[in-house]
Length: 233
Image (cartoon, rainbow, N blue to C red):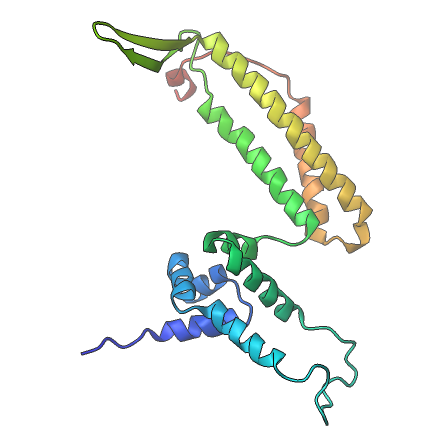
């Protein structure tokens, strides 16, 4: 007996045609995001959009005889239609995963810049764990090459002393912090340039961030070596 089709596929497709993002559809239907993306690709939802657009293009351009829809309309297609055309174009030439990322990306320049600020800040925090130096005896020895000869095998090793690793960490953090400061400055300038158009959330972001930065700057810089066991004692 043939398996009945999943009714959620039609429901998800209907939501997609209303302009709802794939991640939102997955959340509302309590489904994995990958499942919804697979349905979109398998059932060719974007292709059906393109077919409907082609049918509309065959009609006479401009208003149809007796059509009163244009009364009081300033002209121009709804934003949803424009988005469908834009993403339909992308889907023809870009991988599906790339198109999905584009669909989820913010369009407001302030929000885009804020995402970059958060990513840069998160990278700095994450580096604290990755580049942590336990103490002055924390030496890293890494095999970086090997050459096999007829009678002898040659191996190359790299030795990083604790002070080397800590020095590299400080240099990397300095560069990352400089990048973060530049992004924050750009956000602040763009925010005040469009202050009247900015949302309250966009205004509050920079205030909270500046407050946090000022607190960090007031703290004395202290570099110490200690054992991991002592840190968690």
